[in-house]
Amino acid sequence: MDVEMDLQRAKIANEFISVDGARRQAMAFIQLADRSNALQLITRYLSASRRVYEVMRLLLELQDRHRKQPEAITPAEITASEQRTKSAKRTARRTTRAE
Image (cartoon, rainbow, N blue to C red; front, side, top):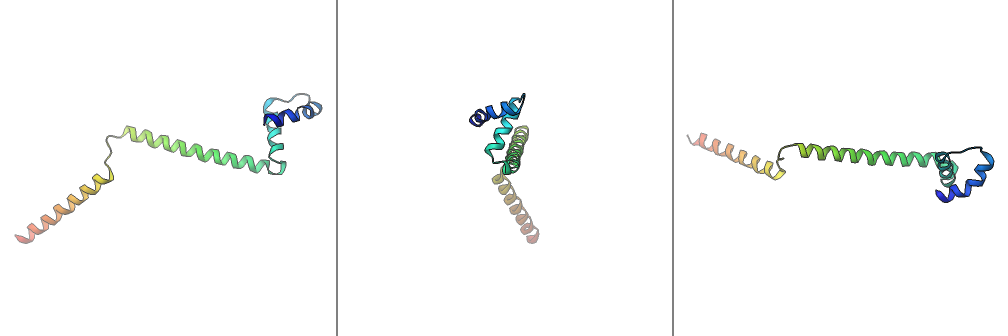
């Protein structure tokens, strides 16, 4: 971008009275991106940036929730608990049938 801005410096000075840095960057970007594709390229970059932002925001939110929760039960603990419950129910049915 800096090289393109330097290359455009004389042309900009001849065509414009005053151009700020943001406009110079925009003009350099358009030139580098090939004028016909500049808008599409900016849109693609913006979409990618938004996706990355949303993923990071969600990750930080989940990490924050995880920190605020008391000790979480792991899937292995849930499975073990379910197995104990099933075993207790079978034992209770056997006991009921035997009586």
